[in-house]
Length: 364
Image (cartoon, rainbow, N blue to C red):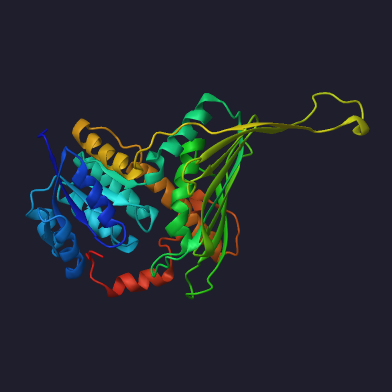
């Protein structure tokens, strides 16, 4: 393949500029084009990157710009249509999380990519962070024993979305980490939540994932919290890990703590749990930007014909869980088996109505 891969970014709103900055910095990437419906956004980005072409027409990006790959960073309701157009145009495609609004849409995108031999990657950035990579290394070595459960809290004030609820906005980060660490998908999902600000769009949710081997995970997501919290706890049979992504230095703390059941006892009076309180230590983490690592991984997969760590199939697994969470919300928290979730095909009813009123391909 040629020395540089020609890349275009669609969607220059909240997250798009970060992708533009990182792809532009990579030596084997030629960032050729930025696409957005807002002339003001394009003008601002052109002032920062004058050598990159700005355009409002997605058709030009797909058919007239000579691109090898397209990066999609638009609102979720446009992911499917834009990714499908990109793949059909023969472009390797990177989609920000979540991959699409339904498992059915994800499956179609995967089929197109596989038929055409194209790389399809989903932006689950945390899997490329030094902290999560270190956690995975520690777990795979068996240092914390068998995982019993995981819990996470991802809280902040805003940013409120108009087309998806907080579970579809924030929980994908935690779900992607949990699936990566456990290396399995849950058998069922429970979800409860409330819509305090915008009717029909939950701003606080609690998701419970049930796995095999008597393991579970709890995920709390909120747009209505005064603090920014990014915390995950992994409880093992030997040790426990606390991951705080907001902490400036000590993002991972490993606690030599556990509870043991005595192997033999003659009576209930003799039965006593053994509580072990050991040391806490902080592993060294390499300092590098996860998004830059993720962008480089996408280019490497294109160049070498490899399947990405966060492939389309990984994105599909996550969307199935979000669909199940949406179904559970509508059933007051009832357990939904992953195979049952296909009846719910979008994050909110409001997003379906809004997407029907807007043009199919919009850069926002």
